[in-house]
Length: 507
Length: 104
Image (cartoon, rainbow over all chains, first blue to last red; front, side, top):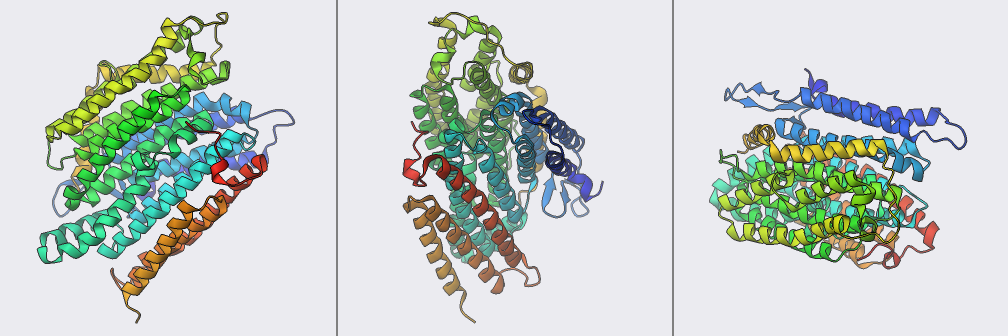
């Protein structure tokens, strides 16, 4: 395979996006007819093709001539095609496919510009896929910015809807400030090390940290640069000081967009965070570990406390996804580069992201189903759901239990790994705060369960008509959530190979 | 040659002005202008670092990145202004304090 073969998933997505765009220009469905569902099907097909292309790339690596060890392949010198990137891409594409299939009807009803929507949907996937394997800060910045700009458009896609408008503009203002701050940080890093390749930056830092006479000057530039870059990436992952946009944007934007923003987009941001901090900033571990730990604590506490007092389930899930980002970050704090144990923090991050993706996509799809049928996201709309739509209620319970972290669900596995990694690195206080937070979170998750099962609805019971496509996506999410929780060993093995390959390039 | 620190101070000053404008102003277009200033501060940094040879002079990393950012800033402004117009059409205001439909 040449370099073009290595970026086949990205090429497929690009062709798909342009194809839908041209089709939309050339083809007029006629007055009063909408072609959104066919575009959605095309988008899902291209995403599935990209997923297959990524799976074919698993476990390719070449033997280095210098050390005779397997090293990850590099495409066009700026993209590392390793198992870590492939794992993230599989996660992202799976989430995007599930969202697309379930969201087709929702978007078709609300907007006329379907060709544009699905073009951007594929472009967002492309941007996340590039971000997952970028190893040069130019490409990292461009991918994050590509992801952001397309996401602004999708969040504000329902132009005539005041809430969607507002969500788009708020996301844009917060997002572009954060990315400009990140860019300034990158420019300082370029000045300090003379390169924008993450491995060159790592090597430059490692060399200078060894020579104590030069440490002070470089550390002087590296610390602010690190904080500035963290601001940009933390915004995308909705970490604590930069999360204010998240509840408003998730609440106001179309639900399929909120679904991928809270899952796939966050996954891509954590991939970049992991590559940047674990590989690029390896020599500054003493500096970034306390910073990230503080962010993790503030993120989960703020997210959980705000989620407690929400009455809209969509908004509650938005705050809960902020809190979940805090738990995931805890795994990143506890990464050990020399560890061979399966309980490593990086494994925890990847497992958590994988389980969280199916769980949270599922939860948002239930919200979408209720929006479609009773047109409300208020918790009162969920009262007595067990009588009106028993399967929906049961599946939502699975997702909420998984978000809480009850054993035999995917969420438990993720939490067990990140808390375990924190305890292994002897951050007992961090793990303790995490456990307390998980307890607080149980209150608001189980409040919804109580509303669904144990409260009577005032109005008469009418069975809800949930669209078939939505049901299929929901079922896949529920099965995956339970499967990860009950039979996790294949996922754990896969995650271990992914993180070993990322850690193998740490100088 | 003008010393590197002068450029860096200019860039830091521009960045601070931009950040102040982006966070302090309530008009969405003024915030957008602040953001553009921040991007340009980073551009000055990149080109100054390149000119003073932090890396090999033959690779144009700093210059190329700066050119990419100029293009990207245009794309960002286009999308941002489109969103601002969409909001203006609905509410006849672009004061961000009055965007309070989503809160809580």
